[in-house]
Length: 61
Image: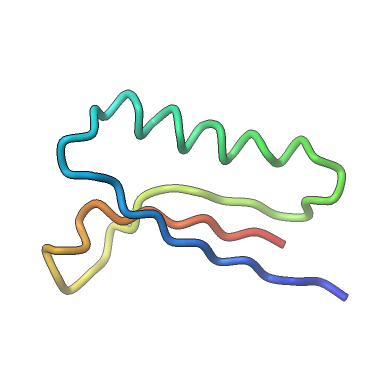
């Protein structure tokens, strides 16, 4: 049985872009785990609210 995981991350507005990039890079590096069938992490570009500008998402199987 495959389980889908969707995780949303809200980053503080004053977080340095290099720290956000390091977080995303670390999350995407989890694809090296044998149990991970699919993993993608990054910012959400399409949203209807400016309050969601600092939201990032992780999707994995």
